Length: 527
View 1 (cartoon, helix red, strand yellow):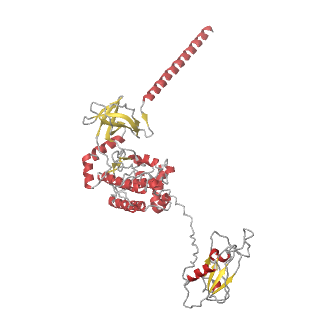
View 2: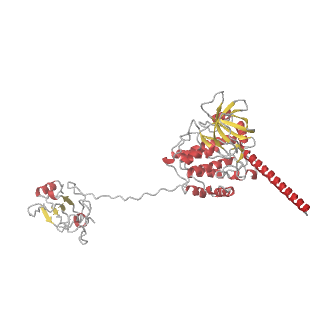
View 3: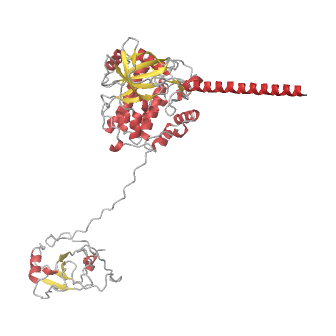
C-alpha cells in the first residue's frame, strides 16, 4: 500500500513538471514572436511596406554615380516617404532644391512612377513639346535622377525631381474651399496642356487632384502636375471590358466612370479634371458623404451623365457657369477609347475667361474675396424696392402765367401765386403784379386772395377740417372763385400779426378778396 502511494506521488510530480516546462516554453515563444513583430516594418491599410525613417545627412548614389544628400522628411505618401535633398559635393549644402522620394523595393508605385519619368519626362523632350505647342508655361516635371540605396538591411529605390511650392488642396482649404472662377479656368488650361503631352506618349495620369498639383516655387502663376504612381498606358481596345483588379483606382471623389471599372482611358483623365473644376467652384461634390462606398459613388456618377443639366443644377443651384456646362457636354459625347478634342476644351475655357475679362496666362488668384460664384451658390438677396417721391414744384411769382396749375376750383384758367405775409403790403403787391406779364387786354383784372393762419387748439387736426400737417412749408391748394372764370388770382400767405391789406376800390384795376381758413396748410392740399 505504501509502495503504491509513493508511485502515485512520483507520477503526479512528473506530470506537474511536464506542465510547467510546457507553459514556460510556450511563454518564451510568445515573447520572441512579440519582439519580432515590433521589428517588422510598418504597413499601411494598402498592405505596402512603409519605410523606416532614414536620417538626415544620408548620402545616396544614383545610377550614374552622382551623389545626393538627404535633409529632413517633408511628407509620407501612401507607399513611401518624401525628403528634401540636394546634390552632394563634399560639403553640406545651404539649400535643398530637390525632392527625393524613397520606398522599399517590395512596393510598386514608385517603381511605376520612376520608369514613367525615365521614359516620358526627359527635359529635352518636354522642352521640344513646349516649343512645338508655343506654351509660355508648361507644368510637366523633369526627370533628374533615380537609383537604389540600402539602409538597415532593407533595400530602397529613390527618385529625384525638382522641389515645388504649396499644393492646391492646401490653398483650397485656406480659402474657404472655393477658388475664383477665372482661376479655375486658368488652372484647367495648364492641366489640359500636361494631359495632352502625357496622352501623346500613350499614358494616362489617373489621379488628378489638388494635392498632386503644386505651384512653382519660382513662378506662383504656374502649376505642376506631379505623382505618377498610378500612371499607366491607356487602353487601345475596342471592347469596353472591366478589370476588377484595378477597379476604383485613384481618389474616389474624382475617379472617372471608366476607372471605377478598372479601365484606364484618356476620357477618364478629362472627366477627373471636370470633377476637380466643379469641386473648386462649388466647394463640395454630391457624393462627398459616400466616399467609403466606391460602388455607390460610381452609380451616382453614372446617373449624373444620364442627366447632366440636373446634376449641374444640384451642384451649382441654378447658376451653372456656361464653360463648365459646355465642358461636361463635350465630355458626355466622347467614346471611352477616343482621343480628347483638346483644342475644343481649351476654346471653351478661353471663351469663359474672355467673358470674365481675364487672359489664359494671367495671375492665379486664390483669394475669392474679389467675387466669384460659390457652388453651393446661394442667390444674393433682392434689394428692397425704393419708391421715388417727386416733390410738387410751386410756380414762382415772377413766372409767366401761361401754364396754370390744374385746378377744378379755378376752372382751368386761374393761377394761384403764393406770397409771404411779410410782403402783403400794397406797394409789395403792386411790385409783384408789375412783374407779371399780362395779356394784351389792358383792363385785365387780378384777384388777390389773402389767407390767414389760425391757431390750432390741438396737434391732431379735426377730421372734418381735413387738415394735413407735413414738413413741407407750402403746397398748392384748391381755390374757389365765383366772380370770374378768367381772372388770374394772387394769394398771400402772411401771419396773424401782420395780415395783408385788401383794396376794394372800384377805381383800381385790382379787385381784392379776403378769405380766412382754418390753416394755411389747408390751402396747400391739392387733390
